[in-house]
Length: 506
Ligand code: FB9
Image (cartoon, rainbow, N blue to C red; front, top):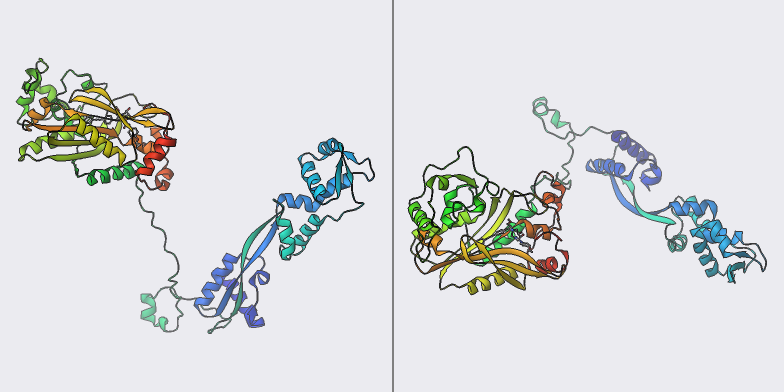
C-alpha cells in the first residue's frame, strides 16, 4: 500500500510539480498514512512537504436532525397558526416534548412569537430558519463554511463539532525522481561480499522515532507508603532492623518478649506453627534467663509461676509481629557497650485470624523501638506526637491497653474530622524489665515501642476500602501501574483525616 501511495505522490508531483493539499489529492487516504509515505520520501529527499492544519466542522446528531427537519424554533413557529388565537403552550409541549421549550425560547428571542396568556402567537408572518441554512452550508462546504457560520452555530450546543485535520503541501525534493528504489535498512554481510552496498540506497536512520516504552516495574502502593515511613524513621535517626526471616522460633517471637507459654496469642487460632521443621534445634545461650523470669520472675517481677517448656519455646512459627525482630536486635544491642539506640522495622507478619475487609492473615507491621535511659511514658507520648505529625496526623489520644511485653501499654487514637470519631492508629508501650533484663540490657535502660500496620494508612491514602483490592490475587494490576506517587506529608494526613477515611472497623 504505502509503496503505491509513494509512487502516486511522485507521479502526481512529476505531473503537477506541486501537490497543494494532499487532503483533496488523496481524499480517501488518512493523514497518518500520507504522513508515513511523506516521511519516507523525505528521508530519500525525493520530496519536501509542509503541514497544513485546518479545522473541519462535522454536524452532530442534534444538528443533523435540525438540518433535516428545521431548527426547533422554526418547527414551533410553523406549528403556530397565524392570527391572534395562536396555539396553547400545552399543545406545543404535547406535540414537541422537551424541544418545545427550546424552540419557544429561541422563537421569543428572535421576536418571531410571543406569549399571550397560555398561548403563543406569531409576531411575524414568515421566518428564515438560519440555523437550518447554516447547517446546510456546513454540509455543502464539506465542513469548511466561513467562520461566521461556525460562530453562529457554535452558539448552540450540540449542533456541530470542530476537529483539527492535518494535510500536507508537497513539493519536489532535491533528489526527486519517480522511480522508487527499495531502500536498504541494514548493511548486511551479503551486501558487503557482493558489493551491492555500493549501489544500494540506505534508509536514513529516523532519530526522532520514539523508542518502545520498556514496560518498567511499578511499585505497589504498599511499597510506596513503606518508603514514606522509612524516610520518616531515617529522618528521626532510626536504624532499620533486618526483617528477612518470616519464620522464627516461639522463643524470639513470644518467650523472649515475656509472653507466657499458655498465652492466647500463642494458640493455633492466632499463630501459624510450622509442621516441617516443627522446631528449631537449639535456643540461644540466655534461654535459662528467660525460663527463670517466666517461672520465678526477677528484676522486680514475680514472674508467671508456671513450668516453662524448652520444647514449646523451640516451636517454629510464622512471626506474628515484627516485635520478634526487635527482641533479636535488642539482645544484640545488649552485647555491645551501652548506647541509646532507635530501631524500626516494616515487614510482613502473620496472624491466623478471621479474614475480613480490613484484615488478612498477613499484613505489614510498622514498628519502632527506642532504647534509652531516663525515658518515661511521657517521652513516648511526646515522640509519637512528633512521629505522627510527620504524616499529618495530629490530635492524638492514648488509651491504656494490655500487651504481654509492655507495661504500661497504650492504644493510639487520632480524631478524624470526616467521621467525627477517634480512629485507632496504633499501639505502644514501655517494654517490660522481665524482657529487657533477660535480653541482657543493663539496669536503667528502658525501651519504648510502638507499632501500626502499613495496610491501614495505604488503604486510606489510596481510597481502597477492601484490603483484598490492595493485596492478593484479586488486585487489579492497573491500580498498581497507575496509582499516584505517595506523599505521607502534612497534606496527606489532613486530607486523609479530614475527608476520606474509609468507614471501616478500626
Ligand atoms: O494500623 C492501625 N491503624 C491505623 C494506622 C494508620 C492509619 O492511617 C494513617 C493515616 C495514615 C489508620 C489506621 N492499627 C494497628 C489499628 C487498627 O487498625 C487495628 O485494628 C489493627 N491493627 C493491626 C493488628 O491487628 C491485629 C493495626 C495492626 C497493629 C496493631 C498493633 C501493633 C502493630 C500493628 C503494635 C505494636 C507494638 C506495641 C508495643 C510495642 C511494640 C509494638
